[in-house]
Length: 142
Image (cartoon, rainbow, N blue to C red; front, side, top):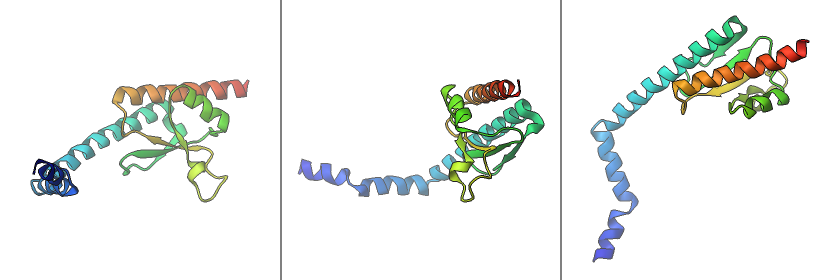
């Protein structure tokens, strides 16, 4: 009998009952609203940091997305070398070129995710990104 009770209580039915109650009592809706607010605050902070750091040298796309932004740099090409140097400093960005259907047109665009970052991590990440870009482009222009 104990084995039967154990198996009944650990089936997907129990998970479904819990989820059903979670949804019926509006916990899911409250959780979604809470997370939207958190992600909006992070997105707004990231946009503010990017604009204050790179000013009019960037364009930002994806204001209404939840977890990522696309940043276009007017004078920067995200080459393999630059992307490696950015990653070496612990900043993870994704080149749009890798995801584009039409290749060869997006070397100046990167995707930045922010869903798991604190504001301190966002600020530090933007600072590191700027440091690498300045270092590469100052060396190239000399």
